[in-house]
Image (cartoon, rainbow, N blue to C red; front, side):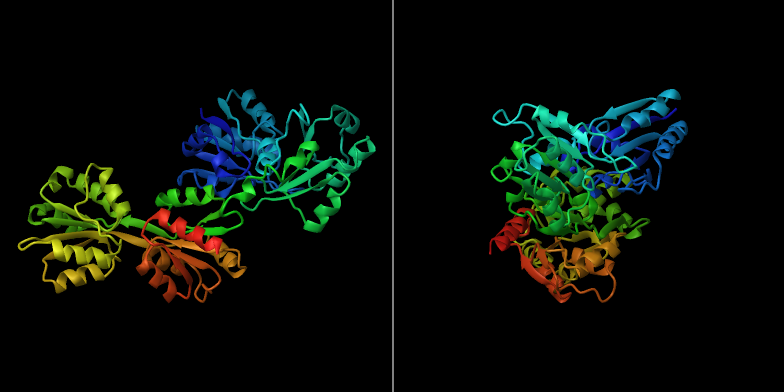
Length: 499
């Protein structure tokens, strides 16, 4: 018998997914998910997991709730570990209780992982504390979803009488009726009220008005779902407490092109600065196997005095190859290690090895120049790198008459399944910056998009000169970090924003 875990995914900001919820997704064999679950959270789903989209839009339910309940039961009866992934919290207007009823009737084991509810987090991201001892001592969370006949079943007089903060979920279309009902029940027209669209996301918009004026303001600004309505005196604090829109990169959209397994640090730091980050990994690496050149090189490893690695991927691939050859790091004890930059050095250090040489400028030209100075008479160099590696390194070694073997150990593949969406975003001018951490990422980005794509409408944020050259050759505007590190890239972006 399988198991079903209801997971609340939170309001949208991937940082608000709980630790327990994240682990449940990573362990899932089947994921049944909603429309409001963000793409960054959906990206956590295991590649081999069955993914079932049951998303609903306003007045459009392609998969009825009864069928969703049946899907959970059927997959659990197949013996699968099922995650039901829901926006916000499972039990706050999420119909989680209904989904458990059928499971309970059939004795299916289940678990509930609560999520951060938009009822509290979205106002917080808009600078609105739902309670404050100088304004109110209670908060009331209400569904604004109207019945099929268009009527609201709300006791407006009771809501007004309690004098608490009112938070209405699923209320965009019914907001005019809600505000009218509150005023008819005696609420003052000048009571502060706010509508917050796409709350906790970098694209969040908020309108702060009054009960008497908010409907008109919503129509003027074309507010759409998802959005929540907040009514109460605490809404007047929004400007004073608005921390979210004050972040340095708020309103800036950045596409990150690093490989999926290495995008985390850059993506997390951009989000912490308030940027809207679109993850667009367009490079995948694949170990070359079978690979007789590398088998021969490892079998005669004693003849080499220098080992050169040009990427963290190269380090991890080397570890795999050593293990496959029934070898380990001890077989490298006689060698000196040269790497292209700090990230590769960090990957080596994670396996207990320190690089003997890192160039001051992290690129193939300066790595080659350093090796030419350091490699002694009688030394032989082993290059383990991508099949599509820069020609600069072997060229300079050859010109210096240094014996070397250049052995490709992995291939770089250029592809992204969301290329049509990216092409449309570029065409619409929705991307401000695209980050490139190597010339390969530039090539991957260009190769993944349709021929004839215009690359002049955004700015390429480059990690170094060779990357910048590749971007310029593709017709991109560029800015370049002063040193080849993620932090230097971020500093350069912040400088650009302050101009």
